[in-house]
Amino acid sequence: MVIAGQRGGKSTFLGGVATKIKQAQRSRATGLNSLRDIFNFSTDDLVGNYQVSYGDEDEFEKEVVDRMRSTYEYPQATDQRDTYIVEFNLNAGQDISKTITVAAMDIPGEAQERAVQTLLSGDVDRYEVREKYHTDGVDPRRGAIKNRIEDSKSINNKEWKWAFMYHYLRSNRVIFMYNLHKIIHIDDIDPIIDPDLLHKVDNDDKTAVLLFTAADVLDYDPTNFNISLLSRGGINKRYFDNDLVNEIDTQLAGSKGDEILDIVKCAKDCNMDLFSIAVPEQQRKEIKHSQGKIVLEGFDNIGRWLKNTT
Ligand SMILES: Nc1nc2c(ncn2[C@@H]2O[C@H](COP(=O)(O)OP(=O)(O)OP(=O)(O)O)[C@@H](O)[C@H]2O)c(=O)[nH]1
Ligand SMILES: [Mg+2]
Image 1 (spheres, rainbow, N blue to C red):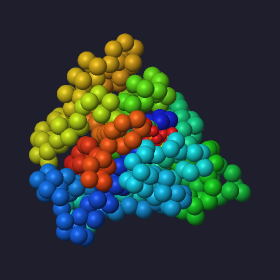
Image 2 (cartoon, protein in one colour):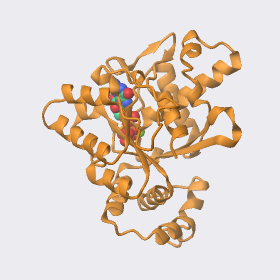
Image 3 (cartoon, helix red, strand yellow):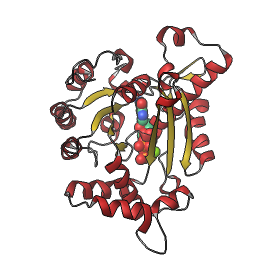
Image 4 (cartoon, rainbow, N blue to C red):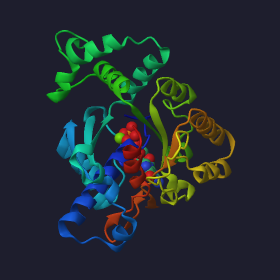
């Protein structure tokens, strides 16, 4: 599952993955791969499809995907009301039996914060979470959370909190998303991602990656770091982009730098992977594009990471 704070880069990331999948579908349909695609196999690692399994599908297409692809604008801040769950089906090596499904929940920040606090308190009864999600719900009159989500009924913050905990407990992998644009240009504190949470995920034996988004604000190109299918030889080998860490270290002075480097150190100590993506900004607020296509950097590594970790 994906964990990110407010303005953590979730919508931009989801729109980027959706765009990548569309670009791949399109080049396969037309057979017109660009030279870049042919030489870099750049779309091969995010081949598949996606659907909006909760929330307004048209809204997601219009306000996130089309907005990015057609008018080169970043998505607007997600409103409480337009929470959605998007399911991506990535087909590993074109082999249907190896399809990887990733459900990305974009839920209200407040519900997420409370869920994380409860998880951190250690006072969580797995059985209770399961029951609430599958059968009891938070209020008998409202019914099971799972059914409400499947029926696309409105879900309140209390219910999202339990849904988040449920998905956390059953996920093997966690993607921590950390928006460098936000920390540099907006504020310095990410309310969710901190060393305590990283340690918690490590203690829970999950496979995790600290994924920095907006690497372009450091003038860093994430495609410089290429996850090779063979690179994870030994058990302790990781996908850890040291060059990115060096850029953060040299470019971010003061307390902001200290804060990120604390988290980086923690990811290292916990044997987590670390790399970055970017949907680079061209000029004030406009997404960089070339020949009509928005530029997406480092997204192939996401596909590779999902295929190479369990
Ligand atoms: N330069 C640059 N800016 C980015 C990138 N990703 C996100 N941003 C900026 O960060 C802002 C927040 O990103 P969102 O994708 O909206 O984050 P979110 O987690 O969906 O935010 P909420 O819906 O408000 O919780 C965007 O409006 C962009 O200004 C990136 O790759 N590069
Ligand atoms: Mg959003």
